[in-house]
Image (cartoon, rainbow, N blue to C red; front, side):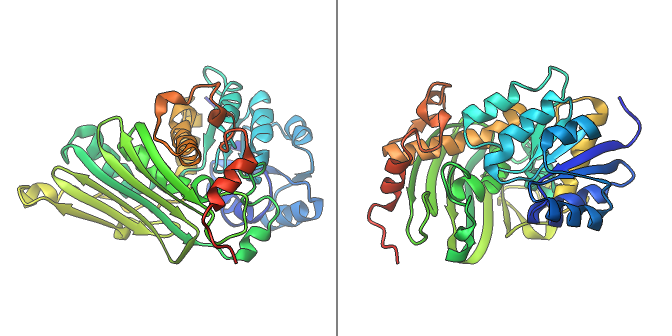
Length: 373
């Protein structure tokens, strides 16, 4: 595998790229050269390129791929543009690191995955909360069965977005974001939860558009049965003034809790042993390093996978799991019944689109009984 610097390009130069992706790439200057940025807004792209010392600016993805020949393409566009940029990069032989949600539907995700090679290039997705040291340590406990069986879990993304937030044209539109907070906000915590809990088997969900004038929901709630038999309660809200991201995992021998908002370090976690556990054993549960969850932490893992020529975490089936659960949640909320994971076959309408093929009906269903001011 290559030993020289990776050539990286960034597609999209909005706030997430300028504030997070480009600094993360720049922080790995001993591994990565940022060779190009792409944006339909040429002036903004030039301004961002100058800020980060990027030599080449493009307004067209294909032109950039042909001229700059990057090893890694970071896709930081609005969600509706993820698929085309990811497929173009994969077809050009570049690995991809794409912002969440990976795609607007399971069908789009699977179409993107079809452009990967058996040995790469691969498309990986931004689920940075998996990569803090405490989450990594907890996954190791699960793999080694050192905390006993998983029984009960909670996963809540309780955030606040005012009316002005939704004035950005692509937000909370079925055609451009694919859904509401379930799709674009809570997906981070749900992905972290599923990385601990494993596969799900059945979901029962409710959704509503209670206060914001959007096409999609502004609140969702679900009960999820895991393949292991464990039960998980999930809530996603954009109407919660005291913002919090909460996860709790109850094992036979321990309760492990996390509360943060947009990122954590070890101090945000709490580890509580059951009464029957030897305190000396419990003392060894917590991580022995303290690395915060961050794009930079995930990027380092991605670069290492590139060097090794191995599929990175949060790609393939591993990157699809949270999107699949979200499709099940929308189907359950819109149809008003539990949904099994095995229902979401390729020809299922909710695999084709989160609204199940009738966006207007989904919008009406979510607004039923709501009082919008």
